[in-house]
Image (cartoon, rainbow, N blue to C red; front, side):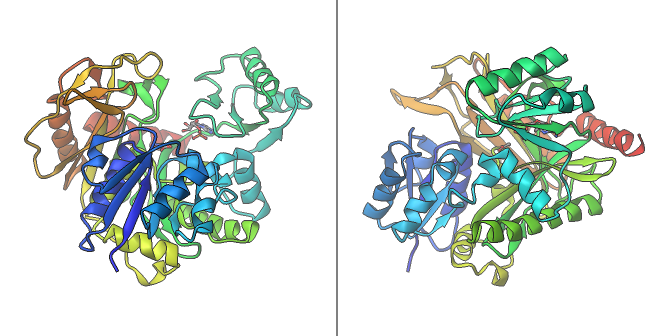
Length: 440
Ligand code: AMP
Ligand code: GLY
């Protein structure tokens, strides 16, 4: 039976999901349901539904009407809204956890408590607050080394870090007061120092199939300057590790992911079926957990799905059926570099409505992904967020960067991107930083 696969969401991540599914030898029928029409995804789909992706009934109705055999949920919002629950209730298997299991992303305290309860390593000191009671004593313990996090989903705006966003005790108190005034519980954590990396796995509830490690770049400008963004670009290495990580770091992160999947099954009484994304930091005292996400990273998935050798449709089927143990999952032994172009002013005051002109001739080792774009009068128009991403693949990170940069340079207009991601000087800086952290 040929699969009919519904993709929920319409960013570059979902475009990457669509491309990976479309190249399957099974030739699945693809569908998309989202709030916006991504022309890159639409070109690969038999039908495209426009609507609210956080309305479980609407998503399930569209899926049923189109005889969906598997749904793949891209972003976190539908997971947190219980879209997977509604789809399973309609007998439609889902790649993406149910609402209860998605708390691994939607509640920072749930995740920290889970690690603590099941004796899983990786937690820094943390405490959850529902009021300001006891706050000053905790801040006094870590006066210049704390992080404050909105306990719920906040679209990347809910985390403030000492030194980056918080420059005095007053800044911290003001942020906490604001959160409580808006009815948001929060978590205070010890600030940890090191290099961040993402380690995602396909998970059927029992078996995990890990993906190569990836490093994202959250700051908007070269040299890790400027405001935080959804992620400006990412790279992976041909050996599927990262130049600043040891084998022990990777093994430790994988062990945490494995234990978390098992703990989730116990805690929620149901298997986690989807992508389990661990955000880690390699530190002087081993690998620490920064956060979990219940979905593919964006842009991390652009690198990983480009490198994926195994049939992605077979992986999705194995996730929902619980048969990942009998499926080997492999990635091309290549390095990859991904860069986003974004409108001038992104992320705070992005320009909107500029025409995006894409290069007509792409080299075979580059792939283009559309994100926040629309079509008007036959032209692609930027709608004000991360616009287009390019992934280059090659035997080395340096070569992959050159391929990616060459394509990105061919996209004219009032856009910018980070020219430093994946370059030798920046990688050398990461290695040096990690050496300094380990020997501090
Ligand atoms: P999160 O939304 O939890 O990923 O946090 C956003 C960013 O804040 C992370 O990518 C880190 O750079 C930083 N961060 C979060 N928690 C910590 C921590 N405990 N120590 C240091 N940095 C952190
Ligand atoms: N690249 C970070 C994320 O997807 O959350």
